[in-house]
Length: 315
Image 1 (tube, rainbow, N blue to C red):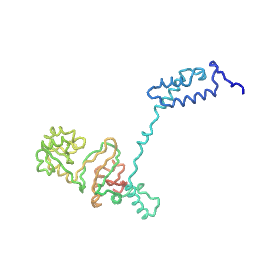
Image 2: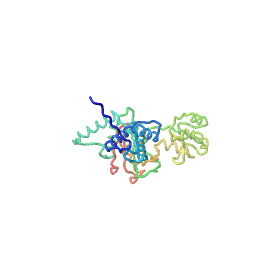
Image 3: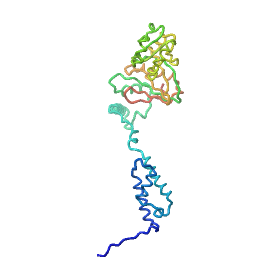
Image 4: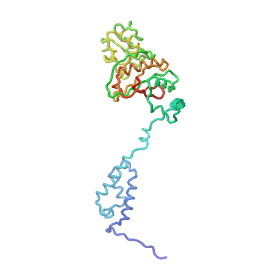
């Protein structure tokens, strides 16, 4: 056997195109590694040291160009999104009972209409039919509420309406001030009540008061405010006639308003065990109070179950 051949490389020679391509490919592999807290400059220096990059080997490119390319690779490595952040936006699947309630209703409607491609979600229904369907779609073990979801053309809508048929949900009213005893409120407020509220005991749904009690109630505003229970003149809970105010809320007076950042109103308009005629009257009162010109779309739904679109022309 002859002696092995040894190839002598001259540093002054310019690297061939194939050598440059191999060097660039290797540089990218090394650049993709994680260098922890070393930073971009350390990454560039590590690349040069490991590859032995010089101005001649890089095809005559200046050192700054090599550094810029390596820095760009570092930037792409640092900004690569994690898999966890992508999974967070995944929609939560509907429950089995939810899916079964829809399938049961659609199977029945398909048999009646003899249309295999029928889907109730693609159809708007007349108010009586919509209420009947909502009752069938409800799968809660308790008596659910008929909820109205109204998409409006603008935000900032707010007001009161008197439902002709009370929802059946008896609200507990707390009253402060002169006349509270004869107002019909469930709880009569005093200084002891304020102490209980400050400790977190809240067993009421509404607070009404006379103006002279507002300075005292301001001390528990941090407890009442986040729950939407702090009295204010806009919703009529600060009044000199406690009896009239309490009576109006017991008879079905309720407040409606759009969400702060979205043109939509969510409102309970009755209980699902009420007669359909009563629920229809409540929904019609809501639509008439708002005005059809302000309404873009209305859907009805139970507390637990799918929603049904209403044909506004039918109201």
